[in-house]
Length: 398
Image 1: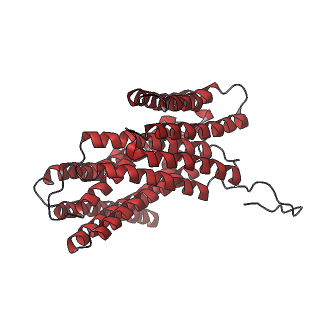
Image 2: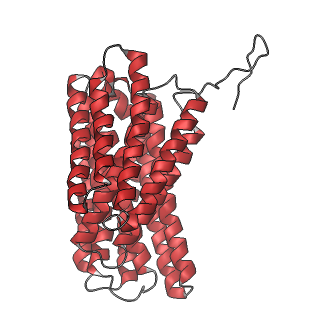
Image 3: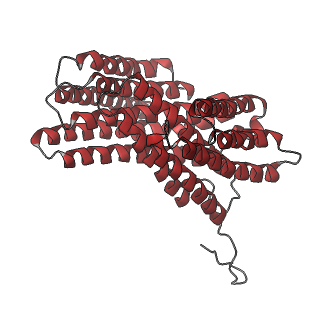
């Protein structure tokens, strides 16, 4: 899209964008990653074991890491025009689409495609990071060439090697990048995390979680559509309530604290806290939501039978992981322990107890139990918030 100059009536080559807000092309880019999550989630439907859970996490983290890298470099490039941002997003989407399509056969005949797509993603990131380097400093960008150039080469070489060697190179690539981010956040924060735009980062994370929750709703609707029966309808309605209550917890209580929490960490130069709460903990939260949706999808076709053990772990463990991540983030953002423990500990403990209870009750009962748990936690937090607001109003009046 071209923007008209106010002075001469000429058309400028690139439209400006508001660096504090998420651009439409960034949301378009997110859709591919949610499709990737949906592809991987099929592997933990039914009765997943440690192999299936491990495969899900192993394949999801490279995609998540590519996503947060793209989010980070765009965040740190406020002068990047809408057109250049759009080109970068489309290129990254092409690479992510191949990653998603290759995911079902990643440990077989599609491993080469997964490797090449990851290499292409890192080339896109390399170009963007080099662009950022030229804007901010001079000299040779050795760290950038190592960070994305070197790892792109590892992914490229892995595409032509046997799978067991490729896996080693994939792990090495991710380890190099994570290690460099961790070290860089401590030694050179002014070149990266220290300059983060808080408003953009907060909105970006919130919108991604919206899309992930939307994918969960789509999964529930699809399962009910495939098994049109009263039992499936009941299980689907309960599943929807679970996802809705998770969304309520995140958007009513979580998103409001993100901006203030990140600003607090930034003012204290707590750059490791920023990395933890924007790069790593949200990954675990999304894993938890995806596992919950997979368990609900398994329950819908057979609501009056026992959920398989793997799905019980997905449901109870996913809810526990969701609340544990929110609790850790709240503590890192400065909330006192006395305010976090009363809701976090009961939520995590009771959610974990759903796993053994699952062995003796039907799927619909375990879903009802999950809904009751989420309603109680939500009611407690709502009561405490209203009481705090009332106490504040009384103090103002007196």
